[in-house]
Amino acid sequence: MGLPAFIAFAVICIQFFGSLMLITGALTRIAALGVFGIFIGMASYHFDYGFHMNWSGTNAGEGYEYHVLVLSMCVMLFITGGGALSWDRKMVKNHPL
Image (cartoon, rainbow, N blue to C red; front, side):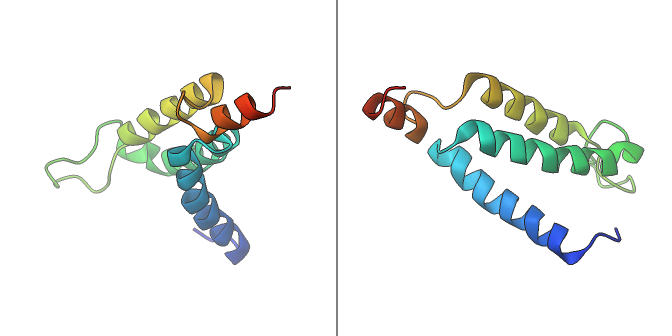
């Protein structure tokens, strides 16, 4: 794709640490924003292949159906934040603002 190596490294870090942060509920809104940015790039690459995923294996590439799902989940996590069992919620209970 012609991107510099430091951007590739940043994408790898955001994917790895962002997913860990979302799983544990640590800094949920920041992690959702980072993953959202990565998936915008992924979806824009897959726009040429259409919406639906290539379940039969007959098309040239995959669609952006999955990316829209992840983007919508990131938006909801950004709006609502972590759940009741998240690390964010435990920190707010211990240190009220």
